[in-house]
Length: 211
Image (tube, rainbow, N blue to C red; front, side):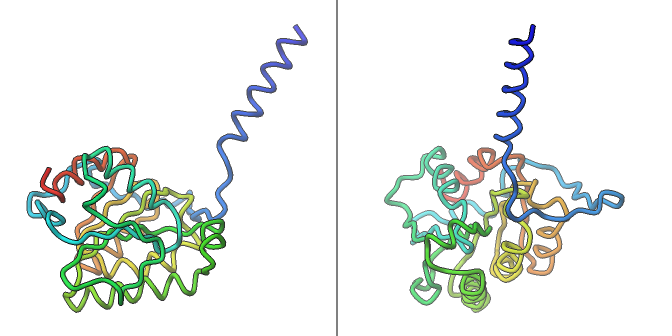
């Protein structure tokens, strides 16, 4: 009986540890939660059909987190590797006019360190993309796929500067628990779509590439 209890205790311990700890959690007011009641997992509207088809497409991250997840979704959607360029520290100045930028927002302390950048420089990059997008030179699709773990003091400054660049935002709903993306999308006149998980974005990616 003691052995059984010990095994159960070990299973519980590992299960709890595997849940991980958010380095940068979003704070919530549990008594007055803000709820975004829009439908999740919708495919984007046909008005976005072929938005990225035949154009120069970049995948980059402001905050150095999670862009590999978006690349995986592209692959599942059937987008060829040759159809886009993944450049983690892409600068707005290096993007040619008419290009489409998939801007993945969300900061990771490990990612920032590995890339040799910080929140200040990543926030500046986000601002530069927004400036170029507002001028009509590029089209920006903002992604946030890290959920609540990619919200908070590290991520939010980048998100706030990036969202004004967005024509369209695809967001895993766990990262919008306080409706920050809802508010920013409304201010930017950008269309916001929420997803239960990144894998549910596949059909929307197909629309963007005309697949």
